[in-house]
Image 1: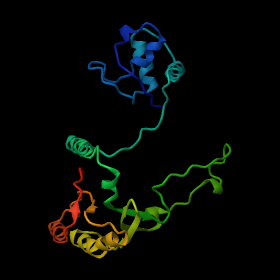
Image 2: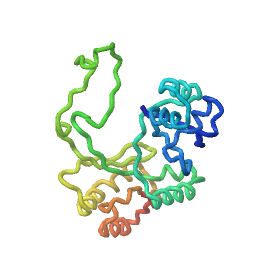
Image 3: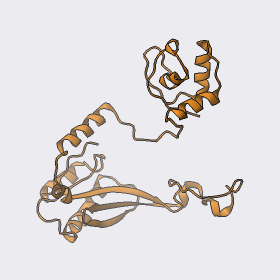
Image 4: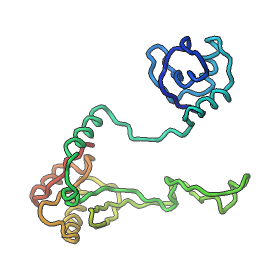
Length: 225
């Protein structure tokens, strides 16, 4: 079980059990916080410092201080350049009006699997009934088949949806935009000055695509990643 904590300090500074929440770090020398420290490590650290406690006592103390054990959330791996780029984007658009965002036509690709193995579903069930058919979701290898889709939307609603057949490259992306982008903009009466958003995937930023967007006088929202 993984635990969380507040600040870190040497065990020699402990005066009571309340200090358990102040020192649960793996790196004792530089005092870096480490929420991944497990209770067993804390038991061993305390024992080495001359204090004997159980894992249950440590868990109770942490919960009493408002901390709880939970699964670590998965997030995209961001390099320093990514973080700086996103911060710059946020600052530049911090005070943009709602009217400005209404003019944006957003786009992306997604994969949809027949059995949805990438999704999570919670059920209510009795003890020892986890494998009751009504409490399970059938799965097959590789999701039982999938399709790739390109789509776009704006504040006015969803627009064109295009099925991607095969592996998409720069040429295919260019064709998708030429067949769907302007049609979507007209359908939702985006008006003059609308802005197109796409991420910086190499297929999206190919020379042919950039030239087509420029030729059609389509303004592109500068994206940080």
